[in-house]
Length: 438
Image (cartoon, rainbow, N blue to C red; front, side, top):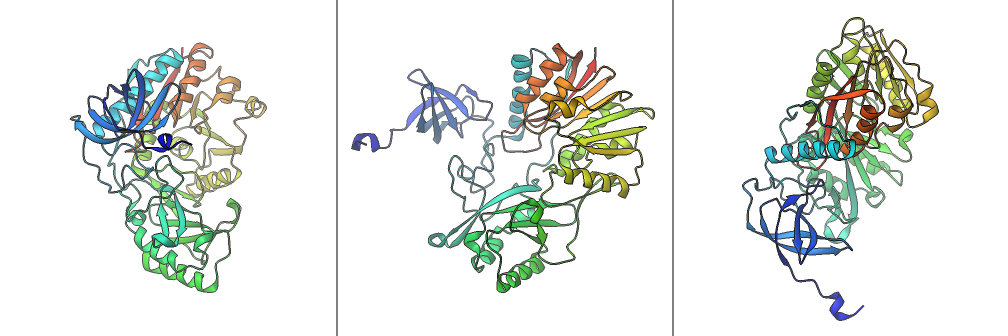
């Protein structure tokens, strides 16, 4: 490589015309599109190009010469380096409008449909909301021994965080204590990550251990657990090896109205408790449950939608691919004395498994798939008797793909859709949509 090629590129001054779906400002430099992290529409910025591609460049805003009225000062000192957030420099109103616009644009351009009504965004307090997270850990003696935090944006490194303002405060305010305790562990270099899982009454930290802790390590962990109230779990292997450090840990649970849900630290649960409660309310509003309804809940998890619906209808049948979540769903139904709620394991990405589901007599459906969407369900599930279908999505691209099939091939109409701000200060777009049989 020549000396000239190694020299850093000169910063460029750009006018930002719009915002990409991923939340980057979009400008042009000598006719070439440039995506700029940290820039907002209407701004003039000085930016450093960090990556050149054939059709576009990627850059980072260095200075804002003319600021948007939607710009605010980030609350977190690590914003811009940490990859956990991408939108702290914009007002919450702007974030909501952007996410709603992304959803509607994808539905129009990919599915060729527009909803009859756009619902008001579901949002709540945007700080200390995150109850599920995976913290990276790196043993770096040159930087004080141990680094704990989210990964840096666009790099494999871990951000050196003293506090996280989006994490549940029971964890986010204790990162320094956590780091100081880990410096003393003999296996600090063999712990690559810590899984955070918070319930209403307890918080679990799952330490992924590539080596077994010594007796002294266990004493340090136990003391940290006692002093902070954070429940420690160890994971020496796969997910089935997760065990509490000591017997008698407080079970993780969350409440929805008069319902109680128990879950394990590595189970999937919604990250934002306040938004989840509002989401359930919107789902019930869309389903319009009646006493004689029979409802299918696909990708049902541990019963997050199934149990509230079962309180209002004749029967709920849930399907989920994870056998552990099915066991938790059955236990939660029994715990809440819901005898009309049933669950079965089924791989909903497998066409044969989906086709084997017999939905005769079920007149309403709720779908809450992973980011890959519900393609096999939309294509292979028999939907002839379904009057209402509620689709909860964490990926607007796969939602648009599935809505296209539902509306153009399966006889449904998109009645209403809108976003829910499950992940404030990020570009993640989650939504809930109502489809009717035409």
